[in-house]
Picture (cartoon, rainbow, N blue to C red):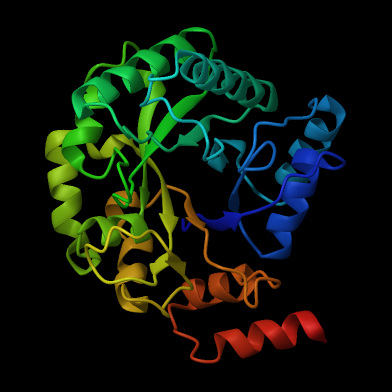
Length: 297
């Protein structure tokens, strides 16, 4: 079964219940959310009553809790320990996010591995492993998914080798996995039109069973640009057919596919129309206008 959804909001007043309602408005059967703003570390108390109501709504609409993804905020950087207080804060914050996921019943938390900045890369990878092992040891169930990165600046996790090194040094291998991002793969130098070849290499080096989520995004930039700018499905340099090949790849059939594509005019979410395109496997050359018409009527 195709598991397709998008990033949705999580507001303190409605929490997971509001996230489910938004996902359903896009005709999704999975979704991803942050437990607070992705750009900061402010987090509100979780309301268990809202969580239970969200469970009931998901059950009524055939959404499996295991296909719901959480994402850690961008500012968590486990790679750099030049400032010991910031490094400890990153570990403690990730630990708290994992505990929040446990409380919400969420199995998977996506994490950007981090940027090494002014320190040596091997030491930065050691820092990531150390931080993850500490955080995972103090929470119970949630699996951390390392996201494949575009290679912007000094980002780590931009190739299979770096991901493999991190994963191989995690104490509890059952608590670590990978989230592929098609835009990031493209911008890191992976040609998505040869996606099966990438999966074969990934399977050989890490194991395809470690892929638990796919972020489906077109890219505004050419192959290998190391830029990381998402584009709407079929309107970027990857192209509609190549993205459909990823989404419907049999090797990832039961893996949630999550859209993180840009809002139209920075105001209107494209997910309802993009999901319709994906389900029909038919590119919509009038996507932007259809989205504007849908929200302005």
